[in-house]
Length: 395
Image (tube, rainbow, N blue to C red; front, side, top):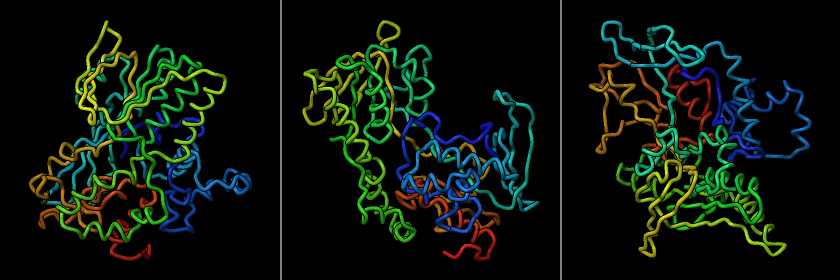
């Protein structure tokens, strides 16, 4: 059950030329079953595109192509029910089954009908949601003020380009791609773009061969076996493994800035790391005033802008609302987070004989590889092996 009307993968960031940060082998199936008919290579074959892909010699495919591939798979799987919003999950003791209450939605998102399904086991794939920092929430929720998350960037791009001054906030890949796209689209010497970041630098992603070993099944097992305190200490220290900027994107930004100096001009683009937004407010109804603090200098300043794009990342969606009916059975850690075992199952009271598997809700127990596409097929295979009690996917 999926509440959206159809499959879309980060539609707001499918920028022209933007590529995945993982190789095409990190598709839905290949790293667990290279012979699967649902592989990216088989998708190319059905589109008569194997030889063009072969000659392109690209290990990292474009995001738009990955989105089209996933949609190709989704349109052929009869078990997928789009336009179904799951409202609650409970354990039915008498039936020894999970009850799943849902609302069937019309294409415009309006409720059409209510329903209930029963299941022996459940897999949760609600993933993450755009994160908006507290100081900017009131402005992001006000329709008249152009403050939006980068997840909605493409939908508002044309409107944003008409703004006199634009501010991008966030030092990761999304912030870099949005900044680069705006820079290329704005007139020379009148770009009027400011790029802010909390981090001390616009840092490259850790993409060394040994660094990538953090995204292996072995490291996930190792991380899961660590004490909770050690895991909590490690996750924030490993931010550059997944929150840095691709080196090619950094090079493209520098090249674009440099190109604009060739004939004596200077781009009106300011990049300021090491600052955070203390507060923010509306100015003259449509303009935005950001109150900033520079952490190293200990100074405060104000920045007036006409539009703000928040490339501030994503946070795991809280499971409490969806799983409120299971709360009495749910086992939690010392920080009140759900405990998740090495088979990607929520740790529940033994009275519940069914399993609840999670996908991309387990960074606190499995480490930085939790949301990584390269581990998705392996994680799914782990779940299916456990679910069936067999070993259809040797791992």
